[in-house]
Length: 459
Ligand code: GUN
Ligand code: ZN
Image (cartoon, rainbow, N blue to C red):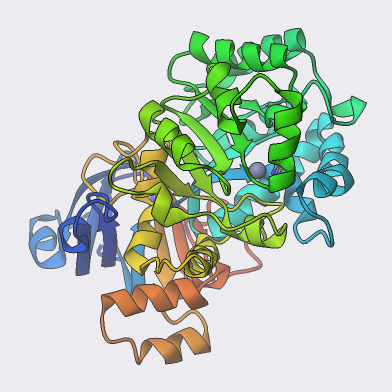
C-alpha cells in the first residue's frame, strides 16, 4: 500500500519540502536552505527517520510503508509561536484601547473566568484547534494567575502530544484583586505546576511573571529564584512594549537603569528566557540580551493593533551581537492565529523601518529561528532526521487568488513571499504532531483533533 497513511507506525509524506539548516541572518540563504521540489519524509515513532529527494528515498523504502502524497503543496516544519495568551482567545479584536487600558478593560476581565476549569478547558481546546488549523504545532503560552488554567491547558495539549510551553501568570500588584496571587502562593503554585507538567510528555514549564509592573520587587526576586531552582524550565514575560509602560516601570523601579535591567537584576535573563515585544529596546539592551542568551518574541500584529510601535528586527539580529528572535502572535492583542499572516505583518513593520524582510528570513523566524529562540532547535523547527515530526502542509491553491497569483511566481522566493502575503488558516492543508495527522482541511464538519482518517484537499 502506498497511499493515504499517517498512523502511528512507520509512514512517509511526499511533496515539496522547505526547511532551514542554519540562520539566514548570519549565513547566505543558499547555505541555509533545504528545498526539495519532490521530497519524502519518513516518519517513525513520532520522529523524522530520514528525509531526501523522492528519487533517493522511495526506492529504499519497504513496499508496505504508506506514503501520503501532497500535490501542489509545501511541507514545512510545524510553525512555532513564541508568545501567546490562550485565555485571551475570546477578546481578539477588542476595540479602541492601547496597552494599559486594553489590559484593564479587556484582558483582565476575560482572565478572571479561568478559575473555572471546565471553562478553561473549553477555551484551551478552541485555542489548540485554531493553532493546528494554522499549522502551528508549538507555542509559548501565558495562562492566567489561576493554576487550574495551566492544568486545563496542559491536559488538552497532552492529549494531542504537542510540544507546548506554558505557565501560570505571577501578579501580586496593579491588577484586579481576583487576579492577584502573593509571593508565597505564586512560589508554591509554580513549584507544584513544574512538578506536574515540566517534562510530562512533551510539555515544558515557563515561569511567568506577567511583566515588571504587575509584580512587586519581592515577587520578581522569587520568580528569578524559582526559575533557577528548576534547571531546564523556561521564563517568559514582556519588555519595552510601549513608551507609557516604560515610564511606568521607571517609576516603579527607580533604582534600576531601565526596563530590561529590572529583569537582569532579579535573575530573569538567560538561556530559555523569552521576552515579548522589545519595541523600544536600546542598543545597550540588545547587547545585554545577546550576552545573556535571552530571546525576544516579535509580535507584529499585536504591536500594530495596540499601536505600540515598530520592532527593529534588523537591529535585533545585527551580526556583531545577534539576539535570538522568534515570531509570535501575542493573541489576544495580536489579531490572527496564522503565522503566515504574522509574517506578512512582520514584513510591513520592517518596511516601515526601511528594512525588507525576505520570505526566507520570515519563514526562518517562525520555524528554526523560533526553535533557536526557545533553545529547542535540536528538537523541533526543521525537517531533519532525528527531529520530532511536527509538520505543516500548506496548500498552494487554497484560494482562487493564491492559485492565480502563484501562476506568475517565477521562483521559490516569490512563491514563499506570495504565500506569506496571501496565506492564512485557509492555506493549511494538514498538520502533523509527533508524526500523526491531527488536522486536515476541507472537512469543516469534522473534529479538528485526530482527523487521521480524513483526506485533506491537496492530498
Ligand atoms: N503586557 C502585560 N500583559 C500583557 C498582555 O496580556 N498582552 C500584551 N500585549 N502585553 C502585555
Ligand atoms: Zn503578551
